[in-house]
Amino acid sequence: MKNKFIILSFILLCFCSQKKEVITEFASLEQLVIPIESNYSSTYEFANTLDDDYFIGYFFNNHSIDIFSLAEKTPLFQIELPSQDPIPFGIGGGISKIGEHLFYKSSTSLHRIPFKENPNFLSESLVFPFGRTLSFDGVNYANSSRGYTAILNDIPFTPIIDNRLVSPYFDLSKASTIVGIYFLDQDLELEDHHEFQFTEAFQSDLKLYQGLNIPFITTSSENVLIQFPFTSELILYDPKTGTEKKKSIPGKFISTKINPASFEEGKYNVKAIRFSAQFWDLTWDPYRKLYYRIEKEERFPEAGERINFRRGYHWINVISEDFELLGHFKIPADCFAKPMVAKEGIYFHRSNQENESEVRFTFFEGGLPFD
Image (tube, rainbow, N blue to C red; front, side, top):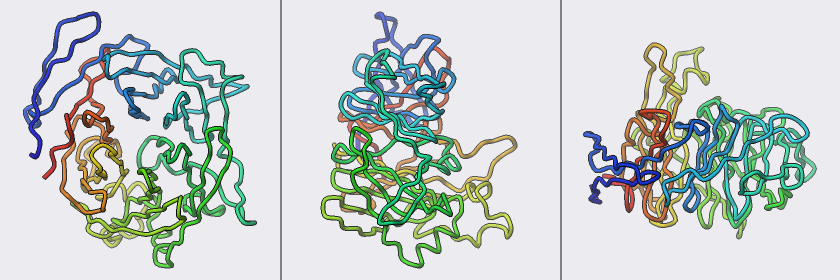
């Protein structure tokens, strides 16, 4: 390992007694434990994000957004979302943050709400519906996040670049086939769009890999990056210059793209193909100038096992800002496969909580130990 880590204890709420924990397989981990009340969730499986010094999670059972302070190691407040008219918030919920606003994504709409306790949703929130058709240059497109849940069991947050939100748009007749991306300002007004210049071969792949043609979209300081589960290619779009290019970075298990011949004839579908090795999201680390790309091992389920959860059998491909593969890091089995980047290091939300009165994180101070 490149970095040397130590196990530290954290002071709990109300000056409670300290806890220390060592995981034998990953002994160089620091465990962060935050006590919670019964109205908070111990496991945020659907959506969570890290912004500045906040952990923000969507609590499915309570239909709420829960905000924690990582600096203080405490829960701060909840935002309970309305589920009925006049402003219904669908089950979600990818969460993004720009300044004093949160952007909450469900399968039907994107909402802007103030980052504060007890907001007035009627007067202080905005909504951008996904159900309506978008029209660019006289052509109609589908504007929907449909299909995202097929692989991930969650709805991703909305990426941000230059304080603008980035969303995909799709072929109107094939709502899972991405055509391009569009940009919204902070008032959820449409600003711009870009149609991808896919080659004929890539278009064929998008039609072939049903269930794996769902795009993962992320942003760095300069580019919008598009990734698909079936291919090692990344699509980079620079919104300032309007230029688009591709980079291919081999993974630990996939060098170029998945070979569909490895699946039984007649069973090439979302349910079967998810067993394959595949790429998931890409995360930009602005502090260490690195990309972290999730790659899942080939994994066939045991009886009753749900293998499309974001835990177990997942790796991170560590990639330089020049798109060179630097190494691999295996994610601890009890952590969700989603690195949350902070200035002081990398957090992973732990999936196997020992009780329902704590939220737990695994923390790598300074960065990930890859080889």
